[in-house]
Image 1 (tube, rainbow, N blue to C red):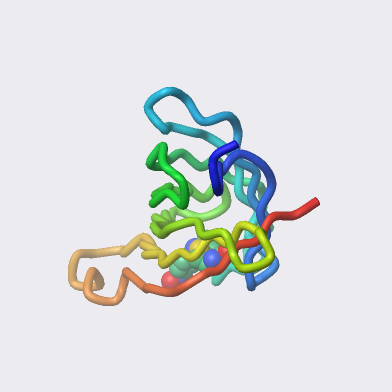
Image 2 (cartoon, rainbow, N blue to C red):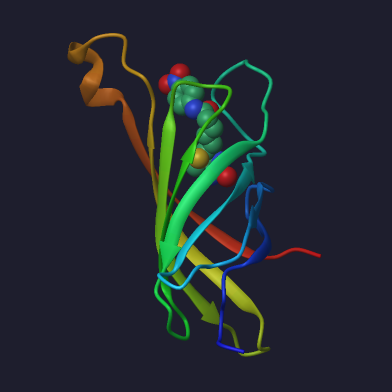
Length: 121
Ligand SMILES: O=C(CCCC[C@@H]1SC[C@@H]2NC(=O)N[C@@H]21)Nc1ccc([N+](=O)[O-])cc1
């Protein structure tokens, strides 16, 4: 099978988990994301994700999570690599957009970070 096909369950360095469904003929996929952390006091609930991967070995990938418990949104992008032990590692960076009450608060509404995912189960 191709190196680093994204379908399956993943866990990142924060302890968040995600499940990616089948990848269609154009590289599209859907799934769900359960974040281990949030900057809201709301109860964390599972959130839908949608994205796409290149259909090559060690593909580039992008996906968006629309949070169900907050008005915010995160886009992840990165690449899946096979490490020296033959395990898949998904290197990503993300932009987290929080909801700004007014445009004057727009400047502080986007944060950036890095997450590394490995396969779970
Ligand atoms: O809390 C949230 C929604 C959850 C974000 C989880 C982030 S996504 C990047 C990173 N990787 C993960 O696995 N988990 C974290 N949104 C939110 C709520 C409030 C505010 N705020 O500014 O008040 C900002 C963002």
